[in-house]
Image 1 (spheres, one colour):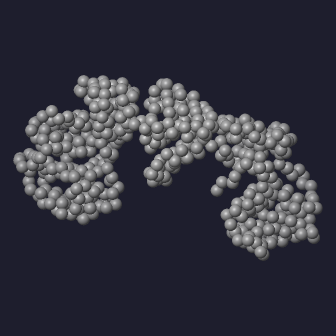
Image 2 (cartoon, helix red, strand yellow):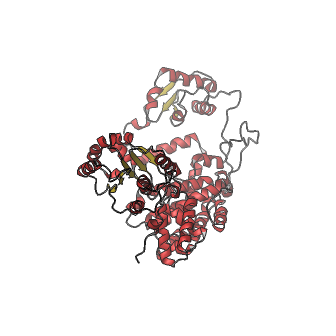
Length: 565
């Protein structure tokens, strides 16, 4: 005897047997029982969640002579058997819109629908699967009959992409009752697989069934098909190892090994890990999708160690131990880098996925070299912590503080110490930024007065602080202050009288007299200057940052940092 697939053999025969879609099945059952069935339905949802099944059950209920009072079909009569099996029936017609999508097919359907059902009390049901494949002209041919259908005729359209119908034939939506089918949960799939195995005389541990349920991604038909494959391999006994072999899944130990490599900063270990996966015949794309899940779970365990997760206890304990070795910010960046690989299409376009995956893992292993300016300055003893630490107004010692060691710098940045990159740090003390004393002591040096005014932050025109800090200032020898700003829209505003008056008034307390202000042409407008290049822009930006924070130049030299775009 020929084998019948589990997805066909265990297809529901009644509304009550359809899993997870109670909001649809219960509505249709009551509509049948109270004779309130609509003339057109649109079933939307992912594949394998019961759209066509419920359409067949509805057709069975409408044409079943032994239907119960609550609207359920008997499932045993000749009419129900033919409809449930998808065989030819006079009053129930299933149409594949992917191969019958033209206007001529729609016109033929419209003409056939005008004929009455084959018997008294029967209903003609047209089930159109993959309805989003119909052309615009085909939808237009069906508009009139959907608005004024013949008596005892019902249309059921099933689709996985309702947005295409919205774009192509929006008036159709107002002529149909729409039902959105949900993805089936892991627990519901596991329960259904257990019932199927019991009927088949087989057994399986819950761990193996959960792996199948997660792989099915909410589709019961996919889960049953995968279970059919595993049963074919094992001959009736479903084991976790067999499931992994059939699905091509990577063992949990490989991901634990990868996390150890990333945590310890063993960059060379990435190549050995990927080479081992290739030699063992694993699909690197499948490994990548598993990596996304592991990083997401690792982040959840780092933020909430007691979170309820569908994991084996041993694997959960291993991930929880590794999660403590990563800062939440590092895990977020790692997950973001991994997600970008697929969203940008790099993995799909690459003829060999090995190189992009190796580069992804190497970028993750070098995350200890990625720090922000705020973290860097804070680790070097610059700005005080938000909770209040040493420094002006912080209640602590306001004197010089020694530079942070490698371990202290990693802790200040919120990341664990990893690799040799975090060991080098200057040992000489770095003084705190100078703060103008109160009351202000005037100085004859106009450049020094300019710096004191910017550090004080009083009287600076709104939005001009970064622009003025990046400008070059000098004393031309006659006591006048010459300002040469960077090019930009702020230069024109700097020439306005209210702005220059505000600058002069702010400098008076620090200079002790009314200064003479001279605004020179922007830096890129000098005579004989070379054309602007990306390297020149980068150098100008670095010089401006050095003027804002003098310790930054020392940090760049000591730690071999680069300015990232």
